Picture: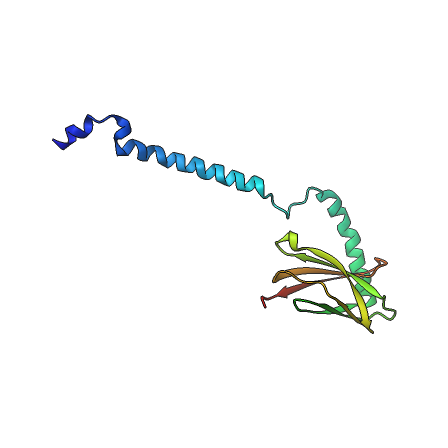
Length: 157
């Protein structure tokens, strides 16, 4: 008897049609939200200028080879307020060095700055490293004749 009462209800007052409509509708809404998120935050690690960056790799490799030929190495220490660098192997040391810090995954944290010589072979800057994680560090002289590349892993403090 109950079945005959349910059968007389119009379709829009029954449970199953709405349940079957909500399943595909939820997928459509999830797809639209995903599309919105993808359009709002494009991937920052993808370069639109990949050809010129590829050509510049050879020049960077030559700068690294020059640093190896000179026997240069660097020891880096840092805390939340200062960046310290000890340059080893260079007879005539410049008054400042150029540093490029690149975070492995979060490009808005990337920064470039100069460190100043405070003693023989010791350089220091008051630049902040904002984020723990993996950092790619490039150390160059102002004449841009050599370059040292290092990887630094910082843990949360």
